Length: 175
Image 1 (cartoon, rainbow, N blue to C red):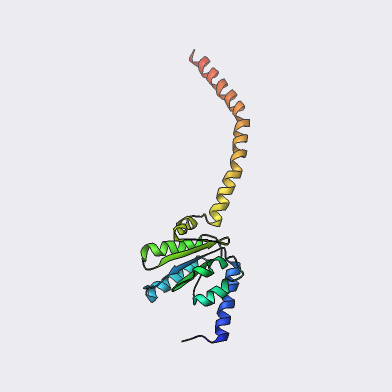
Image 2: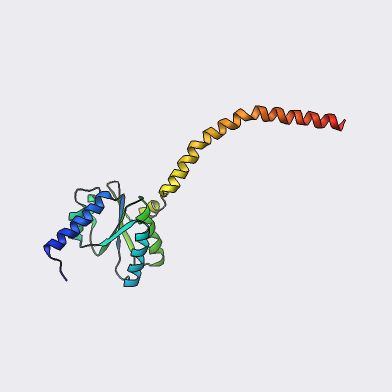
C-alpha cells in the first residue's frame, strides 16, 4: 500500500530526528530474510540501542539531508535497511555483523560514521570498537598505571631495607 504525502512526511521527519542524534549508520541489503529472521534482528537491535528502519531510498535521502549521514545519499540504491547506533558508535555494526554471520542473506553495503562513507569492509573494524564501559575501563587503567608505578618506586627502598635486615637476621641465626 502506497503512503500518502502526510505519512511520507512523518517518516522523513522521524528518520531525520534519529539521524541527527545517531553516532553511526549501517545500510544493509535484506532481500531473502524471512519475517521471523527480521523480527529476531529487530529484537536484538532494540536491546542494543540500535534503531532499525526500512524506508524507501528517496525518503531516506531526504531524511539524512543536512545530517552527518548525507554522505550516504548517492549510495542508497536497492532494497536497504538502515541501522542507526544511538548509544555507542559500534553498536549497529556489532548487531549487523553478528547477525550476518548466521544469516548470509543480510549483506552490509554501507557504513557511515563522522560524516565519512565507508564500504562494507569497514564494518568489522567499527564493530570492534569498545563499548562505553570498556572505553572507560581502558582509560582508567591508563590513568592509574603511572600512579601505581610511582607508589611502587617510593615503597621499593623501604622494602629493600626490610629484605636486607631479614637476610642479615637469617644469616646470624644460621651462624
